[in-house]
Image (cartoon, rainbow, N blue to C red; front, top):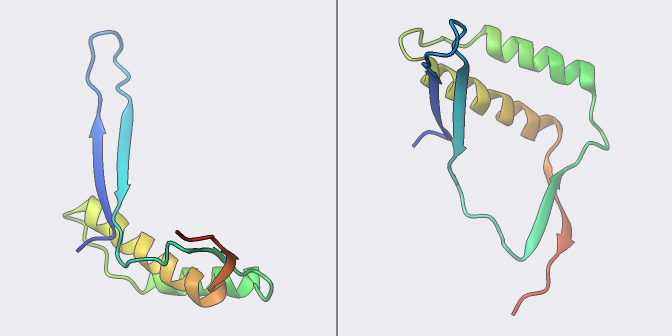
Length: 99
């Protein structure tokens, strides 16, 4: 199941010869998150240079599906999210009161 549903398009109208381009991105819930807690990325040990190096390495090593731009974007977003989770892991920051 894709992480995101990406729908690109061009709006055609008779008002101008410049057609606006758009993209709609809907995220899918991949895994159930604990609703009684709030999580945020922990940047306390974050190293921006190492993060950017890993992003470049990851994206340069990807095989891009040139026939399907939506799938290529989905793959890139997933790869970036994985690197972010490695360099700034999610940390429970707030416990919400339950029923």
